Length: 406
Image 1 (cartoon, rainbow, N blue to C red):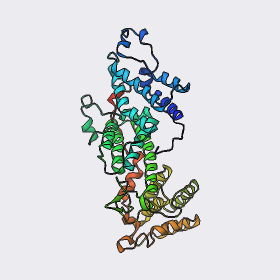
Image 2 (image 1 turned 30 degrees about the vertical axis):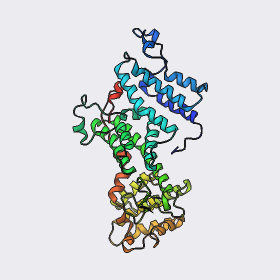
Image 3 (image 1 turned 135 degrees about the vertical axis):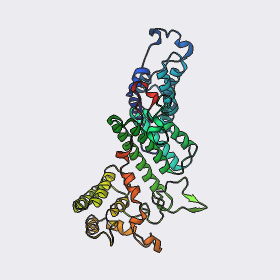
Image 4 (image 1 turned 90 degrees about the vertical axis):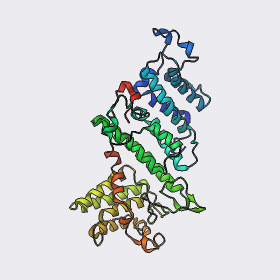
């Protein structure tokens, strides 16, 4: 599995099932019931061969009645397929069952088994979706299927963009419609952006911010893994293949520049908890020094946010982003750069910065330019604010979840 869930898949399934049962509509529609006691349901077993509900699956798991993971997933699938098969099931629950059967169950299976996609970054994208949906089905349920444009006629106009949802993203992944992991990320964030723009309410802002935060954590884990696995020191480009035309692709930065990749092998670049604490001390001193310069201070605060949310997978990423705070000045960074270097020396991290300018990484004249020119500041601001500035969707009635809000 992409992200380590441990070896106990049955234990993981129990935890994920508990989260699924925490979804309000699941409690209402898919927990234990007795059709013979429900007026008008006397013909239930004419259409349904074997009754199943989430409470029974949970009980069977606890009693260790399942011999395989697949048999558990089969029973969860049966819960939803029975609801669809029996025509007297209220339409709102039939719609809910169809959504979970087509989106949630496949990702539950993927979470516990393996991806069928060959490209590593595509596998990671699938696993990101799988973890996001199965870890928090209550929040992500709104984004599993398309918004009903017949019901919400002003939706497209209000969001000023293209409607999208997790089902659409799933299909595009399977068809290879994304060129890299960044394209996948962009559309994932558009889902919550649309939700914010349509609803414009505190509830949806908070829900979407939480979904964005969880997504970014998973995304950055995947990005770090790809960097570690990349050929010849790791590529952060996250493209379909690491080898093109029979030779290794160059390591590149997120903005496509191949001159100053922060993910080339640099001794000590992989952060530990102790190093992250040191980076926080460094940043604290820089923020004190930058109080009188609003631009420097704002950039450094953005770096602080990224550091706090694990959005800087390498120490060199941190150095690159801090460098942006003073690189806009003519003639260099002056006092701020001096303080930065002093702090890096103090915590024995200066060699990482020196390595980023080393001749082995930038031998040509074009590669001797500053980090600032190799790093797009617009990219910095957009990524650092992703979890706080992306917006919501449409506001579906909680009792009619299939209308979702994408």
